[in-house]
Image (cartoon, rainbow, N blue to C red; front, side):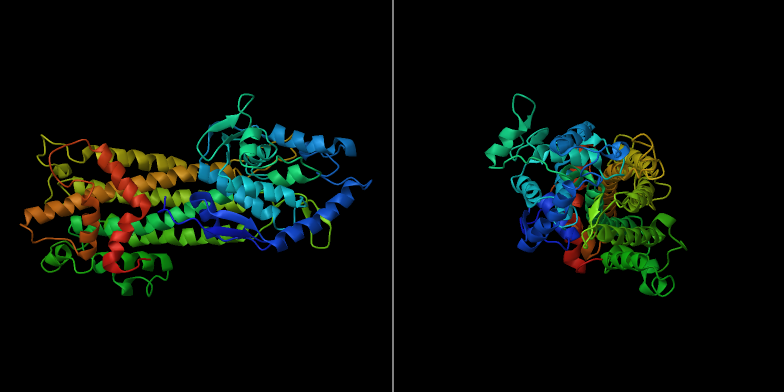
Length: 528
């Protein structure tokens, strides 16, 4: 969603990565390297696994089966087949392929854990995963298959299958490989990558993590940070379009009276976007209205609460980034211990929380849009901001589209994390559904972006009409003027009805690229 950045290099060490590293690899094709220190640690820990593999004492995932089949001891001559069987059988996803950036985040975060020295894989395994990333090869991961417990099993298995030279993948040129005609092994060969032959424990280490849901969480946080600032901008433009007041955004009404930092940040953004606005100044004295509607007056309270929720989600995501999730895991003293850290509950909860946030910010933006289109509430604007109401319908159906998006987001706000379905013969009898929480959040974030694009088109048309109706006296402030200049370069202003879809899509692109925020900041300085 954010504007493209120059490709960079991200180094995996034993100490983890940053959210920015994940975005760089997932969205901007940053090259990944592995530090010598990390590789040495991986090699050292592998020795513990080798010792256990040759021991007569059964060790889960090394010399036993998996999940409900963990009680079976597997002879040494069948353990390579055990790992292959695990990956092949778990590559059981169905549905459409998920987005390339999701798969890249998934693989990078798994490589991060493999490099931590807590999983017991050989260095060649983590190196091969990194090589696949750097070659621009994207395994095909299906929409359905993960329950968000025991890790994102099916999605990670589809990735691991490609490391074995099997399964499905898309090359850097978009060509699909998979099946007998064009096997994945050919794609790896073209990139100079040798498929790996999995040894003890390695299949399990490749699939036992929360990497898919975490990657989608980190990208949603980045997107929501941009959109929440944009929401402050479009809300401020709606205040101008509806002849609202800026006095409710004064700093003394926020942090001092109600110390929520997000609320204060949003109010500050709106106040600065409205600074030096002739439209706002024109009715500061003599206006008979006592208060603006909630959708204007309470915009910082709603968007601010959303900001604070995103900050909480980032705290959870940062903790999860610092984790080394596998089962069993190799402890620093050499013990290999089973655990439940693969359970996605911490990530799933905040994914669901953010879907609520996205739905509510979209909802209040739609209410502002509807108010500008209603002549009974728009304070002098023509019905539906039409050029010739009755002959023209103006933005009537754009609001329908916005309402449909909001309704969809409200349904997506129903939490997935409370909907556990037992699996694996009741061995895995409580799961997080974190993958599903992440998938619906991605759609909710897209909906919010589109809702804000429609509010942008509506508010700027309302402002243009105010200016025309006042013979050029009522003009927006410097920030509003800067936004209008960027938007009007590709999106027309008021006039007779025309094919509206391309204009809304262009506004959506400008919102998602950060161009609208950048335009406002040319007048305001950096916004929160």
